[in-house]
Length: 400
Image (cartoon, rainbow, N blue to C red):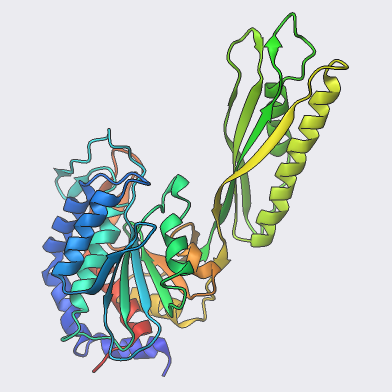
């Protein structure tokens, strides 16, 4: 029997039916957890306080081996009936908001409004509810289930927690599911990879009149940006390249001694990432040569330094694998139409390491993520948690 058929057979039979009913009955508790964790500051790199809150919740749920690793991930295990490679379910701790932003959650009718209420307060709360549903007695899995609150998922965090987790403790995982934000239809099985670069030009600089002819670092940065804007990018595999920030110099009447660009390159193809990284390096080298050639003979030349400031791996979990099939089936079982998708999440890391992995939303509806007006509506939100539970038990197995 394939995994989809197995999940359909389990859906309305104990113990999964009992667990589904329990999640529905405890929906209000999930919301209260979501609000509580969202109001704890957790800027990327400063997740300790929120991690301590999750640690206490893991212990209260009776999970075993609760601990934090060197990357600050909070890890706990629900033992299975067999000594098998574990199934990992994770949700990231960090937010994009600095500590200066108020995280107080406000209610506006059915809507909760607060920075991080969906991304990723919802994912963390759903993970805790699933840990309560898989209690080891009324619902027990064959394989162990490891619950992880990860660090460094957002922006400059560069998936730091997931990289550490799947390179060490969970390198042998059988499968991984990342809970990220709201929603109950999308199934992210294609990992959107990205490379981010800082290109820095340095030179002697000088007065705009008396030192004219000294190579100009801002000119070199501008030439680089213009060259990158002219690159023809493929539609398949979809690849994007953007200069996100540019700066340099100290005054309008000074030849700048330094200038920089920050570049975001994304693709579903690792080969495309390598190819266009080469284009970025070539554009910078050509700009350096051009600006130095324009300088007066004997003028100190510019130099260029290229630093990788972000590296998110790409890859794909084949749609024929059990974890994707289980997610498709679970989505249909809650009455939703599944949508296979591409995104950048913690799941990028296990996917890139050959571990079957997906990322899914944790129920409800949300919007305006990464803004202070971020909102969440609990529109049958428990169904998203039920869907995630269905995926976990489908790949981990159930003791009947």
